[in-house]
Length: 397
Image (cartoon, rainbow, N blue to C red; front, side, top):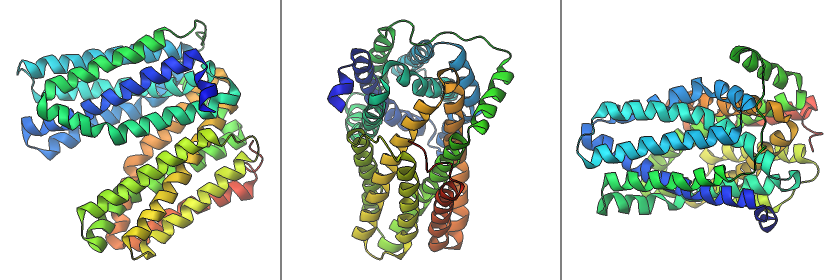
């Protein structure tokens, strides 16, 4: 499967360039909070800078989808990558010359958030235009596997670089890594997307909502994806910390739980590229979602650390498989001229619901861990049951 999709030279170059850039991003993600704490010694500054990136990312996501459908996703991705490379290089220069101040970081974070709002829908809209339909699931699996591996493997060398070379040099490594993905994007064949005309930006966004609402399986799948992310994100961010602290009393236990979820997700994402689903994809999505809900609800009832580790690994594996299958079906289902807007709606649900999911988890955890995990599990199972009863997803192929 992976060998077949990598025979596509355009995708192969893009995957290699993106992988190098994703690995380089880990140097930025490690160096930035280290720099913030070094400048301010304030966790408030760290959180507000991260929020400065998150807010425009969410607010402008639908605009990014509309722009993607009007212009070339390749051009949007190359432009946003170039902007981020310049910003990171500027940070490296300012840090090296000891001229960096905290407001520089707020500005960079805000601009990064804006760039992400355009790059995220453009990236998901581009892939189906350069990969054959039969190879799309393998391409999605390979791309997401690289992203997850970079997040698992990258922080260690990034931390070593910050310690031995310095923060400025870590930023410089990230800036250089953008060159590889920009070169791969500029090397894509011409005509992968045609500029599209239309009315106002607001009209384009409304058209995206109307398009998703008019397609019953598509809208049902959006609801299922939102429920999955809402149901899993909160317990993973809040619940696992509390279980490790109150039940197992160990930071190493928390690390083990987080690692189990991440490694399980990596295995599921990779496995999705090997398992080529040709039929009954809807039943896979519904069954996998229901299984995630059941396993999620079982977590607070398992007394041993190894038992929770096994459950989390299973949840991660199923969610990785479901997410790749879901993304592939969406990319194939949505008409090319609507991909940016429709996929931006999905990403807005994921990005926009994350803070709400964490807040929801925090409130329920104050009552009980049992309430937190059972409520989250109930939401996921209810969404799967709704998709089954409505019949909107059972026929998805």
